[in-house]
Length: 310
Image (cartoon, rainbow, N blue to C red; front, side):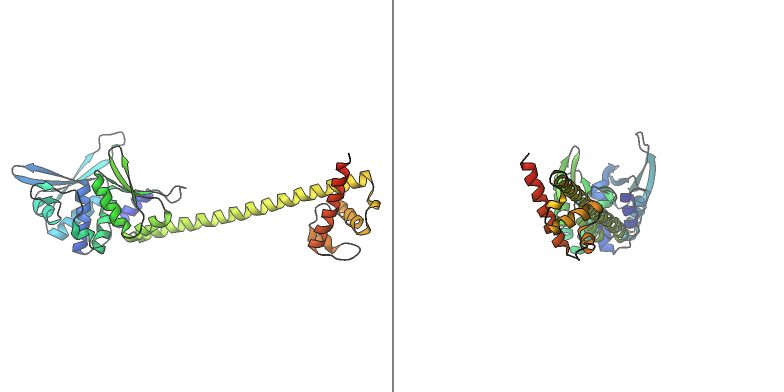
C-alpha cells in the first residue's frame, strides 16, 4: 500500500460532527460526483477507486441525511483493470446537493460555499474530503516531497489554495493537461496539512522518516568532514616529508638550527604522527601543537628557498 493510500485509509476511519461531515461530503461530491436526470428524478453518482472511501461516502450520506445509497462495483477499462466504486443516491439527491450548496436551482456551483470558507473547522473537513477525492502525497522516503490535490476547474483549485493558505501552508496551483493541482512542496507544510485534516498517525510516520533522514544526513556530513580533515592531514604530512627530505638531500639536516633539525628528524622517524603527539616526544622537551606548526612552517620556507634556487 502506498503512503497516500495509508493516509486516505486513516482519514476514512475518523468520526466527525454532522456539520463537518457536510463539509467533507461537499468536497467529495463536488470533485467526484456526477448528476443524472432520469424520469424527472435526479440521480447522484459519486465515483472512486478506493473501497474505503466508497464506504465512507455511503456512511456519511446515511448518518448525515438518513438517505440510503447503493454501491456499484465495476472494472476499470484499462490495463490495470482496477475496481471502480460508484456510490449512487437516488432518493433525496436534489435535497442533499441543495443543502451542500452544490446545486443552486438547476445549476451546479464550482466555488466552495462561503459558509465553509469562513469557518475554520469546516475548512479542515472540506480539505480532508478534497484530499480523499483527488489527493496524493509522495512517500517521505523519496527525496522529493510533494502533496497535491487535483481539481477539474482552476477556480476550485484556487479555493483550495486559499483555504490552505489561511493556515499558512504556502500552497500554489499549477495547470495540468486535464485540470489543475493545488500543491505543497515543503516537508514541514505537508506534515502541517496532514495534521490539519486529521491524519495524525500518518503525520507521525512522515516525521519519523524525516528525523531518520536528517540523522543519516548529519552522520554523513560528519563522516565527510572527518574524511576531509584526514585527507588534509595526510596531504600536509606528505608535503612536510617532501620538504624535509629535500633539505636533507641538498644541504643536510645538520645545517638547520638545532630545534628545527630535531623536529625534522622526528618527523622522518614518525611520518604519520599528528602535531600534538609529535610535540610530546621531542627529546628537548614538550612543545605545543602551535609550536610544532610554527617550526614546520620554517622548514617549509627553507625548502621553498632551495627550490627557488634551482
